[in-house]
Image (tube, rainbow over all chains, first blue to last red; front, side):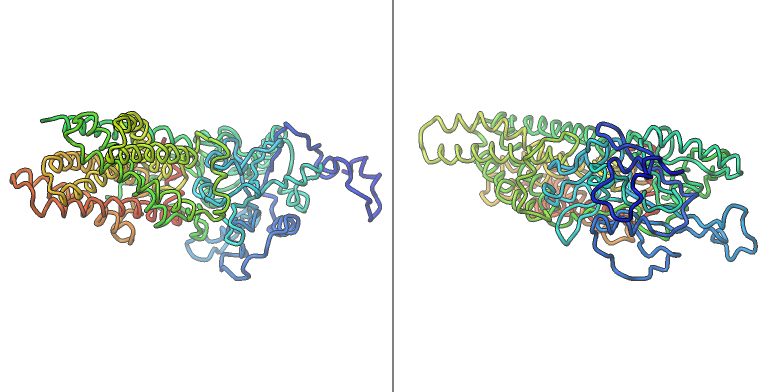
Length: 296
Length: 337
């Protein structure tokens, strides 16, 4: 279905940006003070890695080491400072008990998932950042300001998903920006635009969550009983006070299979209990000290 | 000892087809054994800072307590405590700035205050401690030189905020580690803070006791040793409860003896660095032999143990982040809080 406005831009050369291009490509206008994110439907992923390539090209990210990991078709291995989309390949053939002799009924039982920064509602990386380099944008996404980050590295262990990483090239923390620059220009993020099967969908969170629930119902009707959402309120991933995840997923196996934690938690909830107990212990010992030193 | 609890699973999808039986709970499926988390880059530099921050904070706290409780009787101890607190003032900021990956932007730490970030809290605790400790030590120095009676009073006033900031210095570093997603650090926020508090004060008391011993002032030494015993006992209690939490949430393998940092943590930091000095000091009190070798040995062990505790907790924590079965198991339980 082509947006009627798209017919005004049929030439191969364009003089400038198409105003609100995201409306033509993703059916949504990008406006400040609204929440945007990704719905990654893993049942639609074909493992083409176009998202990885589109991300690297748009964001001018350096290539990673060229190597074979031996992990199915996944030679990217993990998200990193220079890799902001990562397609995981899980071969569910044989169930780890030797070679299977018959195929399970669903697809090829080869699971693929394009992983990305979750842009958490209560983002632990942002809450840990002591410089304010990590901030929440007007599109409700979480971005590292490269001109402020001083490379303290505290956001790295704070992230419950292992997303943020320090680059040893420039000494700053890097992660997915949800294409902050493209959103400012009214464009859909590069990975979502490049995805040929709409496994990665960009949009407003409320609308995306609705779309995702409809998709789960549809899959259940088709017999994919294991389909569920990861990162919408009340589901795995959106636990421990993290709130919802602005980049959420439709999965068909347990979260661990995709290297996702089942019940991630909000790190800053541990500041209070830790400080209070520590200071209480110190106070007790100092009372003891005053008694010891007061005695004649 | 492997009493990992059964993971209670939410039924996923339309059917509860992934409700795991308790027997399978220990075997966590991972993604080709790839780490699920990224470990911090913190190592010896940060461990050394945490140790120095704890020791200096404790020295200021002890000096202030002795000054408040004993007044002039502990004059020498108070002076040494005030000077010893300058260790963190002089070495703390350089160590922390050295650990940044873009050190020329260290001042960005002072751009904002973020109460959800112990790193940000610590920036201001260290700044406040440095300022008040410098003033206290300078006033002490001027009073000793006989530059008027007013300086002694200045020290008596500023030592209060210095001691309060010192209390922060001894413990905020535990919150710094606990408020992350690194399984071992996040597993026991309260017990880790109690351990750090006890270890800091034990190290501070031991360092001051060594100075006293060199000066053969047994009255203050005995009191410092009593405080050291209480602090070490507190640290061991924290270690006991932390160990229980580690087993409960399934991160105990990172502190097990078969991993290098686990062995260093258990043998070096806890057995030799806390339990042995406590035993030596207790034996000395029971045997009623003041001023003998065991006192100095205990002090040196307590100081070394305090550094080793921080280093081994940091490294074993990084190790726990590298093991996906540990982090996924940890993140399948209830919010540790």
